[in-house]
Image: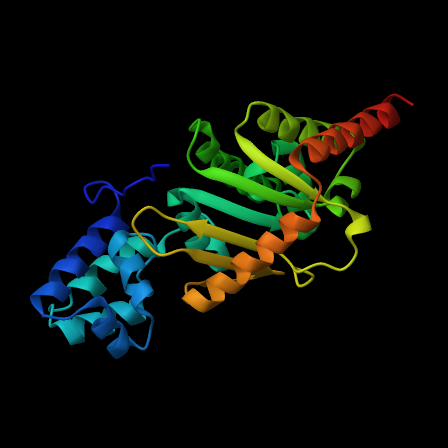
Amino acid sequence: MPGKSLDPSTSPRALLGAELRVARERAGLSQAELAERLFVSGSFIGQLESGTRRMHLDFAQQIDEILDTGGFFVRNCGALAKSKYPNHFAEAAEAEAEAKSIREYAPLALPGILQTEAYAREVFLAYQPTATEEVIAELVKNRVDRAAILSNPTTPLFWCVLDEAVLRRAVGSRAVMSEALRHIAALIRARRIFVQVLPFSAGAHSSMGGTLKLMDFEEAPPLVYVQGNAIGVLLDDPATVARHSLTYDLLTASALSPSQSLALIESVAEDYEHDQHA
């Protein structure tokens, strides 16, 4: 399945990445050699050059010194510092938008790109109960805008494992939940996403620690994003990514089949609708 390539003429990250590749090759360094001097992995350099990851100021300063680029990267990485997402998630959101496939485990709430506007609003009100209406509205808009990546009929491939708790926990009213679950069911029936439900009956499982998002790219190494309460880490170490990939495989083995999962999602949505009318 083809992935998306960033255009240097329209993407600051892609432009900076292309310039990094040119400067590195001019200096006669391989990705691994530059990575060694920066105390990062070779795959991290590959992700910078492909535009998958953002270049931060501290790396820009070191790169300018190592490659003798006269402050070019420090001057130009400022445009990358602006994001409409929280700092702990900004880089992951940018990577998500360029991924050719996304595999995600959601233990507590629906994944952001599957949330309806009403569901997202309830989530943000719970996170920030004292925020102004303007702040909540902006947060909701940004989250709903992320879902635009599913407007492409095939890319990215999105495969999600939902814990049964996500279906059973009423976020907002019964109407909000029924709408949210019907939205997911519609995407499944349109063959746009794959969803499996991890039932309570599965007991202990491979990802008891929390959320998990694996992203694969056409021209860059894979990434894994793990998240906690207002914190998140984007990881590229191959061994770490492989370990989390195994974790996800084990989750899918413990989950209901896609057809069983769809039946359960629609059944729970129907229960919410019945409760509304009752």
